[in-house]
Amino acid sequence: MDTIPNNPLRYRGYHTNKTPQPDRFLAEVGRGTAGGEYQRRFWHPVAYLSELGKVPLRVRALGEDLVVYKDGNGTVGCLTLHCCHRNTSLEYGLIQEHGLKCCYHGRVFDADGTMLDIPGEPNAEHMKRTLSQGAYPTTVFEGIVFIYMGPPDRVPVFPILDRFNLKGISVHPGGRFAFDCNWLQIKENSMDPIHTYTLHMVPQTRGYQQFSDEFGIVPLFIWTETPAGCMYLGVRHVHDNIWVRSTDTYGANLHMISSIIETGSERKTATAPFLSMWTLPVDDENSINFYLSHVRDGDPMPAEKRREIESFGQYKDDRPYAERQWIPGDYDAMSSQGAINPHSTETLGTQDRGVVMFRRYVSEGIEAVQAGRDPKGFFLRQEDVAPTFANDYVVPASEAGGNPDDPNVQRAYAEKLAKQYLQQQAPMTGWPK
Image (cartoon, rainbow, N blue to C red; front, side, top):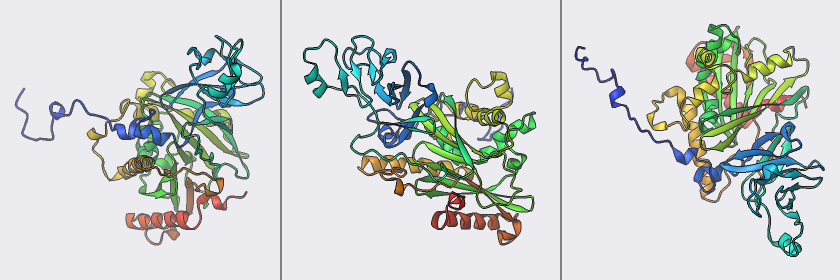
């Protein structure tokens, strides 16, 4: 082969860093790590209520092995996996009318970890007063079981968001989508909206319709922080309208989107929510998405079709590998970055500002916890819970204030709308209650 011409940008494989290191400060979730302490300031999903039956459900969250169960009284409990007596796994425990009984020697634990019974132990009453099983507070919301793994003397309220109780919209628990990668690369995807123009348009070119065709129009994006997270707004000129789509993150583990079949043809200032999705960091290299579907009364889309487009490309075994190569989805794009995406090898551009913003948001949250402060998205009272901002805002193109195809006009309009959302009226404020 002839000598390669002297262009330093060609055939760079030999000079590429072969041993990149992940940003563990942001990625780690284990007990005692900086990121793990941050994660432990938020409620995390661990199961759907429908998964709790006659035997305990073994789960893993933030690097800890646990069991979740519902006793005969309907109380949902979450205990550390190994019995405090002789370390037998409580996944083999016997669910009682009240509490969970270890299969080995019969100790019975309440949902808070206190002992209800120690069969055959003469010193039982003293032991009940001085010993307990590890346990975490639980709450059940719309069919999803959440646990709080942080300091028990400062437990935040589970935030009932403004999009959860809207007139004419029902909420349904979704599926369990497992990812073999770190939580951060899943969550920051929601602040990486240019991927919808590329990744989510692949199906349209290869025989499958998931998103509407209008997502194939490149929007102008802006990003901003919100009282509880981050938000982007994307502006498109479609059907003689200005369509501004917004998506937001909330706390450490939640993001919300509006409909993926929106076309921008129907004018409106608020749209029905579509998905609310929590990401559970199982450990540093595995995650699970739990979600709620928001369905408007009279929605013409059949439930099975809705579930199909929600789950397409969202987990490893949704289709054979060859099909996933031909039409990749979110799972393939995110998990293929590696178990923990090494940021040092990325080459970011201006469209990655949302990713940078989200990483900075997480970093500042970690630093707040290290300094003894509450991170953004942590609320002790329901009345302090911040609004959400995922929406489709569609108005006549004449309201753009200039040429609706001019990027400067689009940017100014997006900035004006973001200011309106943050300072005057969040999108769901105007929805009928």
